Image (cartoon, rainbow, N blue to C red; front, side, top):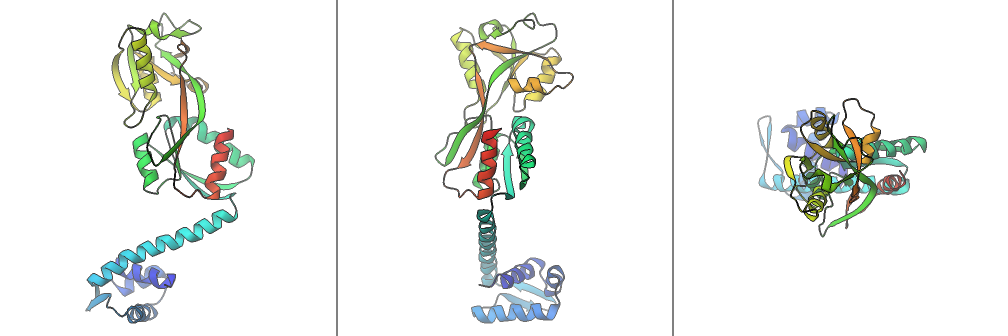
Length: 293
């Protein structure tokens, strides 16, 4: 099936008239009308009912529209995959990530792209893990980078960045001068914790550590993003936990961050991909960059 004919048919179907479609396609109306008639003759069916200046799709036309859209999507995918397989240094990578990945991992990867003079464009979507995994499954993302450990039969997950957890303390807190903090020291504190709508998150590990010390933490706030929690800690509303890299941001108005040592808990940024998905060369190249930063 000729791609141009499919594109013309889809445009006529969506615009509802040959004149509007011709304008959108940057062509004159008579050749487009002839093309649609020829397409109907080739298929042996009527795709439109013609009433005055309007084209109304027949049931067969509606079916053909759905199939034409699918064919065009497949054709575009073929062209894209051939180009990407030819040279992994040029292309587009669609990345879903948490804010932490946007703050630390993505900038480092972008620096690698610039240093290596790669023509890779990165499209980033931020969100929580379940949303990003669904976008991945729907074909809108090539990969995702999340804090939560997501376990599913169709998902491949591996850690690309591991770091220790630190405790964020409000101004004047008696533990702020400590070189490190034990989880047992936090028995009477008000906790701000990260929620993990899907999968297992770092908060599960923290709560288990509290239980091992004989107490259940008082949790006043569950959230997805770390920065709002740190700002609330600075207001004296409670304590929070963050990856050690947050201490490198150098932002004003941030609370004191003290390493958690007993137990020492590590948090991971996990690279999530679909097991059965074909990975274009550009995406493979980008994943290689992530593993180096």
